Length: 230
Picture 1 (cartoon, rainbow, N blue to C red):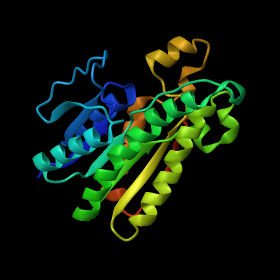
Picture 2: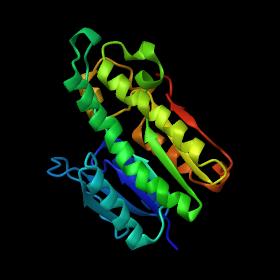
Picture 3: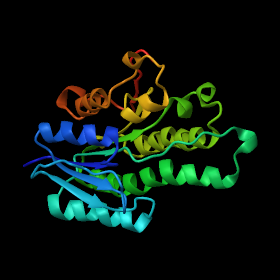
């Protein structure tokens, strides 16, 4: 039976790379895009399904996951790449900015991870990947990006709580911590940087897939720093 993976944020550079990697490994992939997403997802594959859903809506996220379960019967992995970035020092960051970053980076992950987690506990196996960040794990890297850093920091604690609940049940939640990802957008905004030190989305996708293979089956509670030389 073909394995199933959920990938949120299908139109993003990382989500797109993850989808292509898992398709190449003969997975069925359910990839999400936001309503009205201006970025096209040009993946032509019979085993890929693009699903429009607002993952910040708890009920919509749960329905999306249940629909995948109804169709496929199992969820082997979920890669939750949806998120957003914002600059802002503490003295200039109000609660509105905090709540916006929480909604983008934490709510979307939480709303998707919870029904996926419930299903994986029920089926007795599964791998969940959430995207952290250096500012989320290292306070010193979060200077000038308070709301983003706080939102991402919750991802690490959520993964700890999930792994605590799933001990002994072969359900593992990992946090991927990339340095600067080599994307066209980042190259345009930081043209004087050394792009070779950044990490390519395809390299991150390879790492994520590895943690879904039998070779990584005994690993637990991973925080995976994919920094390259940045």
